[in-house]
Image (cartoon, rainbow, N blue to C red):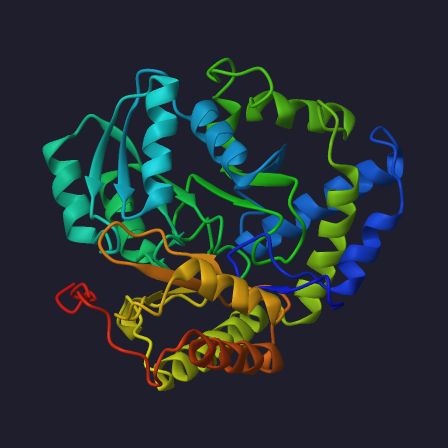
Length: 383
């Protein structure tokens, strides 16, 4: 890293390796056979990570992760089909906005800012609303950092005969998911999260039979995953101009993911990052929003201390000046900020950001340990 390249302690984009960056130094022709082979390789690798080689297909989609989520919902959900959306943060809310925009009917279980949707609640909603065809849930809701219980939700969907769609944007690649065993009709993620690539495309891992039956359903020309899949099958090419440099970087990132030990290796490092971060921040007096049971190894929300000396903008700028970028809070119930655990971060960087935060607190006139938050939520003690 240079003085101009702070470490990104965010949920993506994130800090990438030098070798991933170097993979973008070559130009590729979008119709070239070598590039088509690269696309096929990353799709095969993603299916292997997801355990979906025999049952699912992988379809990449240009754009941000939200593009891939909208493409998936618009392609596999028929216009008249009703969906149950599980919400406990900004990204669950965004799924509701997408379905509203698409004119797809849905029912929401909204748990607020940070409570997890539980299997019994989903079961009750499906019993009361037998016309629901699919359930959509965010795997890791990064607005709070909560890791939602997808296994119990998947089991309820299996028993009820409903499709499950998982927005695993910030979790896939570090949290184990087997789409065939859950089961899961579709899983959506993107290049710039736990695989530690760079932004530019997302991807959907979809049951082959479900996608094959989705012809003509999509609301959009460019976001039609069925047509994207068909074109890839026939030609090996993306339908429209692909982000060639990003794809090359992602292939390198996937090789590095495998070399680290795959999902298990990445989860071990991220978990160590989280535990080290949380312990250090608690020593400084900062409180986590969530109790340990619900802390994800992706990003952690910390409650702002109750002091007129604490102002997030100044806090952020002073930390950035020391070489680290953190994230503002996204809660409605309390003032907070977030610190990510993913990307090319190791013990050295976690220790350094804790030391930087301690220095900044003293610079701003905060006593250590910092004052407790004025009105802390219940921290899921009863969840």
